[in-house]
Length: 328
Ligand code: ADP
Ligand code: MG
Image (cartoon, rainbow, N blue to C red; front, side, top):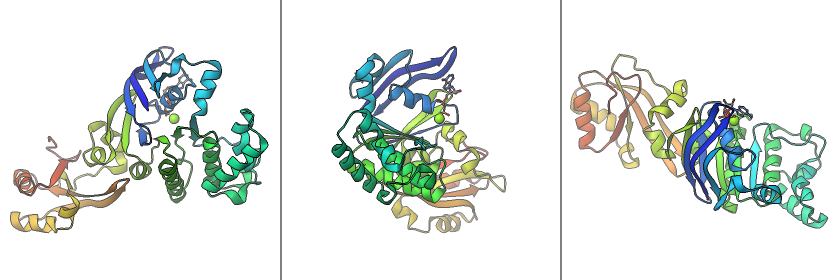
């Protein structure tokens, strides 16, 4: 479990992290998002003890990270695997030797190393490449090797810093699937830093959003993206923004599964005697199920009737930015 209370981290007089509070339970997958420079990597470095912090508390399984030094710090870091966007493999070493490296540093016997590395290469589906050099591998294969290396010492935590950002979207998906399997099979707690929202949605349970070193939003992934708070809308920006075409108000309808199976839009149009433009509709896959949404444009003046109609049928909705009234 990771407990962070009032954490502050400065670089000279620049405040990289300010009053961060987080609680991460064992075995779950957490997403950490935010613009470039918002402090995500710095936070990961604080968690694995690679960088210190000025004030506040950061406890990993009850241990205050800043109090560790020497061998204790090395042992602590052994429990925290890390993977990066740029893979960070040693170019001159084979796949096998890259994965074996941490165990060699800890002076494990040859047979122990051999057993573990063989097992890990199978786990990440790259056993056939054991003698290849990193230059002979694709991006996805390199990241599989990096994942195997991160798991060598049986870590309790795996920190993934933009681990899929350098990969094609479909390869990124397969790597994320692999990480999800590892989380489920091995029960490793994961923190996934990513700017790829589809990756985030399909893999994480809880999300923390940083903005200029501050924690500005957090919560369960499905509810956070169903009714995104202001800061999340800013981050999604052009990625998901929908503009009204006819100057009306943009509403995002969030029907439940049962409601989504009904023709709600045509029913509402018929009963209110009004046509609505659909700006966007989708069914998004989250880790714990799918969410359907329907973004429509409501002519100004008709909003009160539409709200009443939706309320009566208990259909959830939220106004989108760009709409003219957008109050609730
Ligand atoms: P992110 O990973 O969200 O892109 P970082 O954690 O890398 O952001 O950086 C957060 C801020 O801290 C940035 O403004 C960055 O320039 C600054 N920063 C990071 N590391 C250092 C450092 N070693 N020295 C000075 N400033 C740093
Ligand atoms: Mg970063």
